[in-house]
Image (cartoon, rainbow, N blue to C red):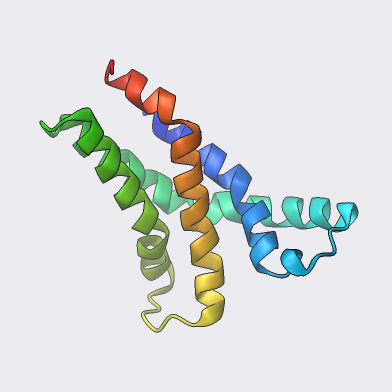
Length: 131
């Protein structure tokens, strides 16, 4: 389960950067101080609000490890589930089924960070299954 924790940490370290880019950082003006300030402002919230995702991910990964399918299928299943996990957590935390543009601006960077962290740690995933 250390794999899930480390992947979660990587995703949370990426998340503030992606949030910053979505919320106006792509307007062409990258001010170093602003980026650093935004990063450290968003980072604690990212960790706190993604704790339910970590708990769910531990359970899902445990189930995926036990399923008798190929390692590639396990990886695809893991990637697909983790991609929608921020949306599931959003619904669980806020019970808000009426998604607005601003909601998606929070959820999409979370999903992208999750996918990126999985692919950054792809070698460790396959190592778990001696592949």
